[in-house]
Image (cartoon, rainbow, N blue to C red; front, side, top):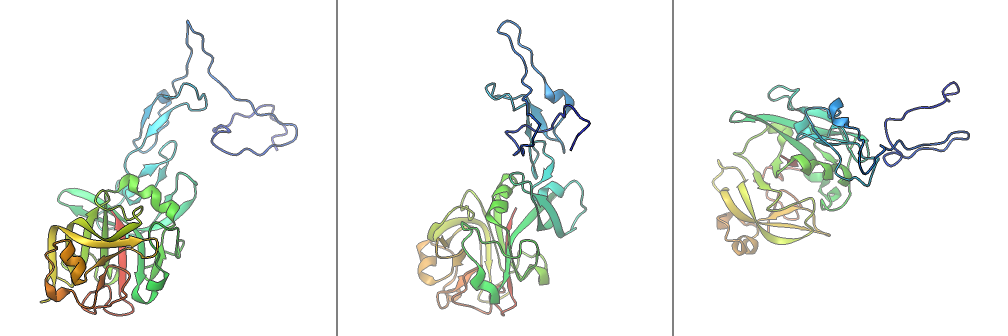
Length: 304
């Protein structure tokens, strides 16, 4: 390889990639020369190396000559030069309203592509995105593990009956997300906050990291159980609800009476039947809850 080439300039240093040794070849580092009285440096930012609107700044670690610049990436982008879309928000510049579907992302740490389902919509005048990290039908609930575990399902075959991202791919998403949302039957009914729905910030409960929550009282922006149009329904805004996720129990909302009372939730007594589980786990199923109305009912978890 490169038989007619005496010297090849690589775009990456050996600190960034693993170079395979080949007989007859030698690797050299190109290091900017500096004197105490006359420093000589190279300003790589003049070449505008950061893509997709990323901001370039000179390196701050003078002791590491392999770092030539740093890119501060816009929301939804990642990689050394912001060359990768790492969440659905990276497509906001290229899609039109309600162009929901499967999009390709790249994990900037592994440089491997992966697919996710993206939802786009307008909130007021702002165009926003949501990234699906898990969806499953009630009949597949036994496959679901806590989000703190690496338990991907059909990661290369995005569907609503049984799919989930790997832990490695989930971890890059919070860089451009501030909330998590749980929905039911999105693929059948679309998006509606008037049916079963809950939304909270990652600051109030980080479902990707918290594995010690047992009926933990979590402040949510809004929650609807069993739909606002149903007589025995519950709706609350800026209220605390009991949430569970441990090393043994996957994420879910506890709608049993004791848990509800412990959080002073405004959920009426009628909603708490048989230690009911909502938005996950489903050891006690209520068919009025659209996530558990039938074996084909589905539950989605999104990052927003």
